[in-house]
Image 1: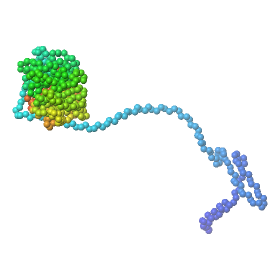
Image 2: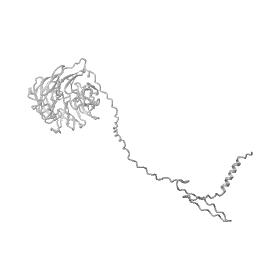
Image 3: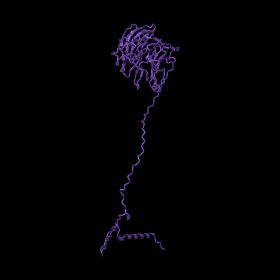
Length: 492
């Protein structure tokens, strides 16, 4: 059997396909009675010798009913509407939003305050073997003057009843005139402020810093003979000169500064206040002190709610006064002259976050002003400063203002040359406002005559003694009255 190559087979197939493509296609039989079908009429057969017409196109059949071959449905451009949805259930209630707390600013770190430590006794160097000497404290209680010895265990004794002995009265208690008297430097005479009228006409008192319109006179009481002598009429706030020969006071008539000669009773005004009138606009002198030479006085000229000027006035009233003017916001408080030289210790309100009254030193001509303390708060008028007899120390009651939010007054010694502080007492500050002792702590205070002890008020009703030799403290007096209003005088 002869096997022909495969390519011959494929060549034959290709020739057959080519021949078939050249032959005309036979006309399809027309289909009749087909619903919707359209046919093209048959072409006539040409005559002999005429060219054959072009073949007729294959008839096209259009089927436009569903199910016919080749039927393509028209897409549904507009869909049937869906059913309207019914109401939906209400949503669950939303919880109330929680308020956002305001952001709290970060505070700066609290500064660490170093508490000034309490000094160790002896607070002042004394010669070996020095012992404290007893002395007498005079104070007012009611309408009488009492005397209290500093000796341990001593009890107060009635010293003078002006009404019983002289038919005169101490100023009415409602006037609150604390400077009811002053003891002479030699301790032999007591200048007394007395009145013939026991009825007060001032509803709120004058505190010795106001004009004090209540009529009072100044008498000299001899401590040995108990004789009484009128020195000046219409005067109060007596202050002895260091040599004991003159007495300075404020006139009830002019509100100016006057000086009386103790031996003769002669008086003259050394500084006048203009205008001398009582009322809200009154101007007056107060807080006057003598220089060690007994020839000059430091005095304050006060216009309430306006200014408080410090002046140096000659006791004879001949030289023009020297003045340091201050405004309402930086006034002077209290001035004390050194007993041995020409220096003045002065409290003054200064600048700061919280204005404080600090201690200053200046010369007697008001030059060379120098600040000694910073950050201590001293009371306005009545708590010092007080020089020691040798001029080496200043005792004062003051508050360390920045040691705690709530603090009270403590006792301090200050070196006037270097400004070195020696804390004598320390009351632990209160932790809250409710625990704060609003009665004021320790002060006012006084030097004992021999300079070895300090007498001071604690709280409101107690009088205490502090030894500068060994630091021992003990209570001298428990009163039912406010001791600050009673005035205290220390003598031998």
